[in-house]
Structures are given as structure tokens and as C-alpha cells.
Amino acid sequence: MNGDNRAVSDIKKDLRIHMSSMRNTLSERERQMWSYESCNHTSVYLSNMGIRCFLTYIPFRSELSTVSLIEWGWQQQLQVLAPRCQPEDYSMTLHTIQNWGDLVPGAYGIPEPDLARSVRSAYHSVPEAIILPGLAYDREGGRLGYGSGYYDRLYERLRQVNGSRPSPLLIGLGFEMQVLSKVPMDGHDVALDVLITEKGIVNCKEEAIIDGNDTFQ
Image (cartoon, rainbow, N blue to C red; front, side, top):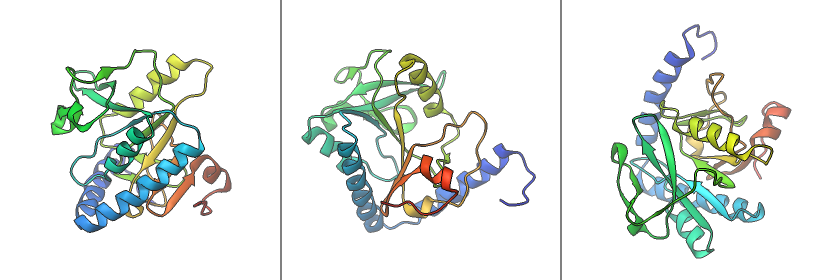
């Protein structure tokens, strides 16, 4: 991307196509193995941080699978939240899920909480951590999403609701092959606090300060 004078939106569009294609080339064995390793790192991190309530995406197509992380959360009796997308305004509602039967096909074909079975969180309820999907990441907290801004809007709403209290931890979860030297970011894009892949955990805030040295733990 060095020397690319195109608009950031155009660069992102092309990069989404490229990264989606790359992720689709992973074998099922690679996806399963690396998903499990990434989720294991995530569960250790959440435990160390004392997290009792977290929001996570439900995996779709070639995304890193969060299945083992969700089941770990249930086993630990944590509050596991999943989002429902509202395409009319690109917002999300958050719902507690307690088993796989709480999910039904939703917007875009992605599994979402069933309104008849899951418990919707109150508007002012804020999870301690949000685990985000993405197409590309960098170690300074950059994330390339799918272009609709659902999680950016959600984070801004939760940040305002929380007031002076700490904002939710933003955790990007992806495969190491999705990590780039730099992800193009707009002014409204929210930076991650933590990036987790099958290789380990990166504290993105520290990484930004030290300008790119490896901080895998």
C-alpha cells in the first residue's frame, strides 16, 4: 500500500476481496487447528483479566471458529453474549446465549440469537470484552472489517453508555495469515486493544507505543 494515492475506502474494498480469498484457501484441518489454538489463547487471556461477561461473534463461512471459546464460556458459567444485526440501521442488539439451540439463521445468513429463546441485554448493559471478527489486522490495533461498521457503531454506543467507566476490551480474533504490517484505517475506525491468533497474544496499545516490535506472549 506504500505510495497508493487512492481513497482509503477504495484500498479497503480491494483488500477485503484479497483477504477473503486468501482466508478461503485454508484447509478445513488448518482452520480447525488454528481456531482451537486461538480460542485457547483467548480463554487464558479472559481468565487472567477476570472477565465474567463477553460478547463474541458466531463463526460464518471461513471465519476463525469461536465454537470452543463459546463452549468454554458456558463451562465456566460466564455470561456469553452474541449479536443480532439490524440491517435497517446497521446496529446490533446483544443477547445471552446458553446453548447452540438459542441460535437461528439471521441477517446475511449468519447464525444469530433466537428472539424466542435468548435473553436480550438491556440497552445500558455493557460486556467487559468484545471479540470481533475481521478480514485483516495489524499489531498496532488496526482491523479491516466487512465494511458495514456494525462493531464501530456498537462500540461507540457502549462507550457512551459506560460514561466514565472503562470501555469494553476490544479483542480481534483471527488467523496469523490475516495479520499485515499495516491495515488502512479511517478516522472513525476503532483500534483494537488486543489481537489474538494461533501464534499468541499481542497487546496492541503497547505495540503502537514501541512501533512494531513483536509482543507475542
